[in-house]
Length: 425
Image (cartoon, rainbow, N blue to C red):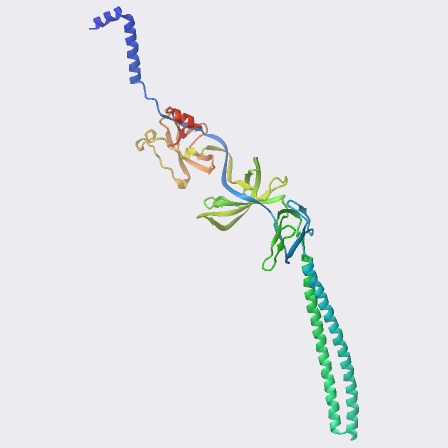
């Protein structure tokens, strides 16, 4: 049989070569290893810096904002300032029509004058009453002397005594009138002072130096101060120092402490990173749609004047940091290879870390890319991108971070794809 095949090959060398190539091709496709559909991506363990942040957002506010209101009612006749106007303490910002209050001042002055005239009349009456009293005292003394010698009847002496008592009572009445007139003067004076104070208050003045950041009135506006003081202007006393009022989620508030450093950006200057510091963590909870947060006050220097009240700040509160430590990408602590590639319990695989000892499980690359080695490591500071490894890994080792698909993409997937088709198991 073999001789016949050999003879045929000699007679048909071309066909023999074709048949041989086809046979080799078929055998190769049957025996070649299957192309894997995925691969594991790794990252190298290195030394570097780790920063742990708490992200939040908040609004910029002036450190000291003053609401300027009106204590009297009336119509605004003049407004001397506008938005962004710098003002100094005592500067007149607006004027309320003083006509009504001026009339009250005139009425108060008239009341004071009337009370003073009443006092002068009471004093004149008192002087006359004292003169009458002196006269009655002399008259009674003479009549009593005559009555003692028997030259005057008892009835005439009683009449003189009655007149003396009446004169004394008249003096007391006039003194009471004087006291009443003086009280009326004080009352009218108090009312006059109040009216003059209201007249002064028709000039709305700045209580402190700063910048007008809000104006709520225009000439012709009527303000009513009957029940509460209406706000007319808002002054930022010093915009070189501002604060951010940030809402921090209850899950993160335990990491935030006074004095921690903060970095933030605002939409107006996306390339600028501003530095700040936590001044206060308020303990009063703020609940919105069943989400509890806490207000954190952050001090900001605004010497360049770029920041404006009301801007939204995207905040990163630095709650922990370390320099030049062994670190791994944080996703490596959460990544798990496919079940078929993991070590089994028989050969020591699938170890369970002790979270109380701050242990975590990572998978280290080996010579076989589909047989990674599970390893327990002790971790330290946990950041968003990297986590400190205290023990269990050395710089230079490679850890698995994610899975990459090697399946050929369909035309539709290729058109819709915007990057690598990566997925973690």
